[in-house]
Length: 516
Image (tube, rainbow, N blue to C red; front, side):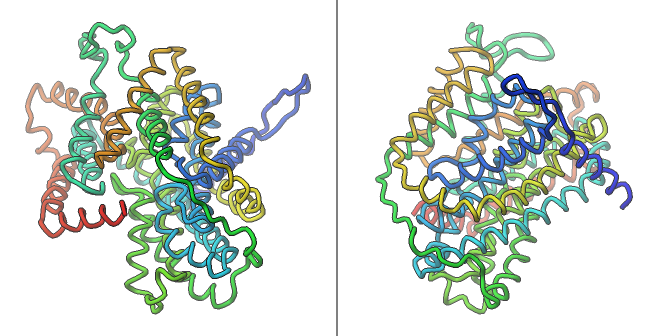
């Protein structure tokens, strides 16, 4: 306990540290990391509010901008964008019946009906309260389990890391919606894209086709921005805009005593479920919100009200998606393995700043590690302060037609990807991946498994070859080491489970319902 308090003190010191800041020739000392936290939370909320943009596309767009920031400041801002988008997405879902991002799809069901019944303010407050509580609990779990998990991670060798990444990618396939074959194909495509470039062992150029710009590999920013940014814009331009914004019915924001009684248990259950699902490979906020809604509909005494404005159907999913957003940082920071697409982008951000994700971050750079964790607490508090008073501004933003927004989005995407390597080739590559991403959407293929494969592929290859070098070519090294064997058996069990006919049919039904 004393160690945890000391670590958190280190984090608070890092976030609240005063740094010189110059503007118009005047130099002053400001807590710049706290400012980056506020900026990230504000941008995340804004992005969550605007339909058609999500945290993945936003982080992909702003990834190059963090290059000019200090490592801790850049990561704090990106983290704020992620959990801020979970908050902001609920505002659009409740007021307009349009999910600001994927995890807010479930919020539309009962949140929008509450707004239609004149309870938009109570719905927004319920989402904010549930999100704040779950975010704080998720951050507390991250702080509590970080040290023990990091100690376990130090026992991992190349074989264990390879097996863990295999489990991670199998998990991404299992938890992806829709066709199993398509999810596997996207993982394989990501793996193939990750091996393009110069072989780190031999120095030989692979699959570069004598194109000098590909000698260092495909740009991570180009892939992320194209598949998630450009493709999302093209898809949104197809949608006919019809927004019914409830601007005159927001009277009271404070829930009644009965509302608090009904939302308390769903918030606790959603927080617990989201905390567990956020850690799983391939999981995340979207999976947690759908799971929480299903659970609440089964256990609630008011199940007949679900779909008609039940407060339980709003409180549970909102708590679950924010808890999952926080706990998804656990495998990233302790093991160096991204459990979902957003965390894969965080790996890219850390790589830009020459930080190797994994347990060594805690020992080699404790200020960054604990500063990031503490910033999440402060960021959650900022989001509560931001969300409710600024509802009027968010409502005005929702009335802006998308045709006025998308040109600015595309311009910022192009500027961002260009600044990474100052390369026009990367901009054209982003456009190509944008077209590819649009095709994936039309074919019903998720982009998240591709991004995970792209990030984990080079790491898998490196650990696989290192394991064989240490064992002198003996493949049994993956099965004779207990931890590695256990991880591979877990991956095999997931494959068997998802191949069962009953599970397979439910995957297809869930995907069809989500698409509808």
